Each structure stands twice: as C-alpha cells, then as structure tokens.
Length: 122
Length: 122
Image (cartoon, rainbow over all chains, first blue to last red; front, side, top):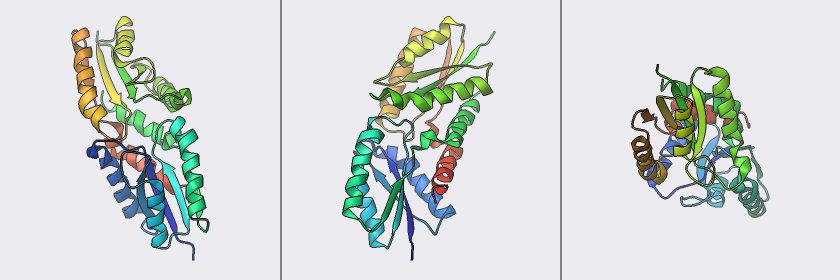
C-alpha cells in the first residue's frame, strides 16, 4: 500500500509565535486532505527538522513524502542547503519516495492571493 | 489630491534570485491596480530599505502609503523591528498617512492557496 504524506517546510524563527500560520496550514491540510498525512518541519531555529519529520511519518507507515517549501523566494537556503538536506534524508530512508515542489512563492495563485490581500487594505 | 501607494515589504536575502517572486508581485500589482503606486522594500540584505522606498513614493506625490509585510510568520522581525522602522519612517515623512497590514501569512486566502499548491503535487 502506498501511504502518502506532505511536509510543509518553513525557515523557522526564534519567536515561537512565528509558528502560528504553520499550525493553521497543518490544520487546514488535515481538514481538507485527511487521507494524506501532514507534518511541519523547519530549516533552523524551530523543531522538528526535516529528517525528524520524515522519521515520524515513516514510523506511521508513509512510503511517499512530498516536501513543500513554504518560502517566498528561492535563495541560498532553497538552492544550496535544501537539496543537500533532501539528499541526506533520502539516504537515511532509501525505501521511501521523497520529492519536493518549488517554493510556494513560485505559484501564481499564491502571488495572486497576496495581491488581493494588499488590495483589500485600500 | 490623495495619491495612494503600496509597499510590498520582504525580508531580503543574499541570493539575488530570491527577489524574483517580489518582481512578479510588483508586476501583478501594476497590471491589476494601476492607479495605486507600488514599490518593493526589504528589511535587510536587499535594497531599497523601507525609508528609501517611501521616499521614492513621496517624490512622485504619494500621500498615503500602506506597507504589506510579505512574511509568513509574525516573529521578532515583524513584532519588534518593523514597528520601530515604521515609526522612524513616519517621523521622517510626517505629512503622509502611513499604515501597515498584518503579514500576508495571516490571510486565510493566502494559506488556502498554499494548501491548494501542495495538493497539486499528488
């Protein structure tokens, strides 16, 4: 059986309140896509890291994991650090199908939602 | 006459390619809301800063400027650094009406667009 999972992967921050929209994203995912497991993970400053998040999904049977970078721009973190991290995770869990999408800031609908949000301020 | 403007305010990054979605946001704004001026501004690592962006809008006649933080979470940057920066800018340009929205990551439609983007990966 193929058990799918998504990891919403953010930068992380020192202030714990930075986490709030990520909690909302996970809750939205669970409500709308209950058959696909979801975990949050962070590059730095917050827990869990990517490997821990994958491990917790593997423990409950995930065989296919898609990582969605919840970043706007694709700079050094996503172009350099992230592929290295993904490769290390794939090596640790060679039997799972691990892949990543582009950053959410690459998506036209996400950008449009930001424009619409700004327009409502006038 | 009341001349309105929006500033899309991002964190900034060392890698210049991080800038790309912000350029797309500015282009979308210009196409969809041509009567409201738009500038980008960055907290650090990229130019212009917030004060420079406001100055460039003031020079062309802006009297009302809304700053939209293009951030997901509201951590130390938005809760501590940003209000100080906004106050300093308001003192520099006391005759303009300067305000800010919450971070775009607080908007339900932005979060929904992220969920929909993730769902398309399956």
